[in-house]
Image 1 (cartoon, rainbow, N blue to C red):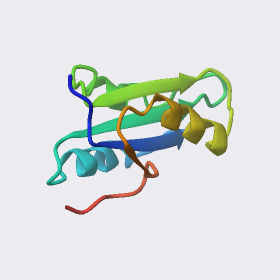
Image 2: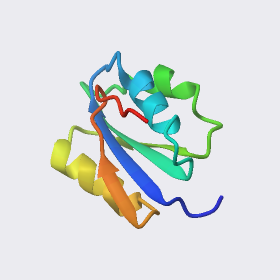
Image 3: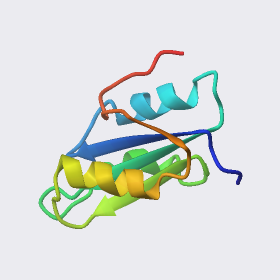
Length: 100
């Protein structure tokens, strides 16, 4: 896979009923050369969005990173930024929708 032009860092903690819609809104942008980095903080030792992210496991544009313990928003953002491959990085919350 070539280097994307834009990395979207999407931190999530606890179950997010809008996560799939949020990811889809990024993937449906006019710019297609995008990667989405979902960073999930464990809640009570569990990852509550694994089932939602299962449908994206074969999509190379989606990367799923996990914090085994709750590290908080800043740490999750830093982890996502550190793993971003694009020159441009944006953040989006799990309940945000990006319009084209």
